[in-house]
Length: 238
Image (cartoon, rainbow, N blue to C red; front, side, top):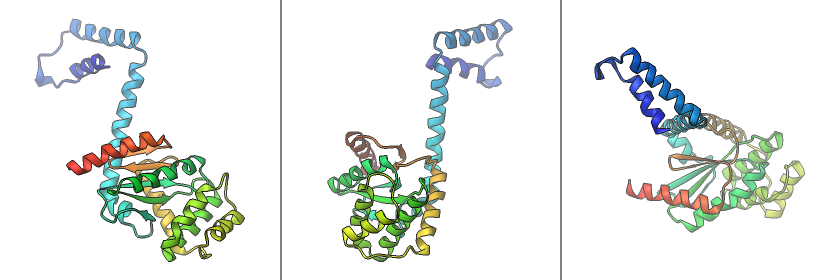
C-alpha cells in the first residue's frame, strides 16, 4: 500500500513543488498505479479502511472534547471506582444484549483489579421496549438508592434472554432492592445517552470508550486488559 500512496502523493503534489510532469511521465505513473492495483487487488480496500479508521478516530476525539463533562461526570450515570481515576472507561450497554451480559463482568473486574481505573455506565436501549423499561428502573435505582444499584445491575445482566416486567420485578426482589417507579429523569438520561452514542459513532452494544479509543463489541479479558494498560500508561505519561 505504501507504493500506491507514494504514487498518489506524487500526482497530488502542488504545482510549485516541482516541474510539471510530461505527458509521458503522467502516462507512466498512471500505468504504475494500474499495475499496483492489479497485482494487489486488496490494496484499495485497505486504503479505504485506513481512511475510515482515521476519520472515526477524529470523530471520537472531537466528541470527547465536546461532551467530556456529560461522558465522565454526569451524576445521573452509574459510576464504579475511584472518583479521581486516571482512566475512566465509558461503556454503552443494554440489559437485553447477550454480548453485554458476557462483557460487563469483565469491566467490573478491571475496575477492581486496577485502582486507578473507573467505569461509567451509559445504558443504551437498542433492543426494544423491555430494554427501555429495565434501563429506567436501573437508572431510577441509581438516582434514589445508589448503594443498591450494582446488585440490581448485575442481576439484570445475569438473566439469559430478553427481560419483561416479571423478570425486572424478580431482579429487584432477589437482590433486595427497593421497588421504584421509573422517574422522568431516567428517560432524560436515556435520551442523553442516545445523543452521546450518535456523536461517538456507536452503532451497537457493547461499545466501550477507553481513553481516546472506542472498543466495539465484546472481546476477551486479555484483550480488554491490554487496551486498558496501554491507555493507563498513556494517561500516566501525559
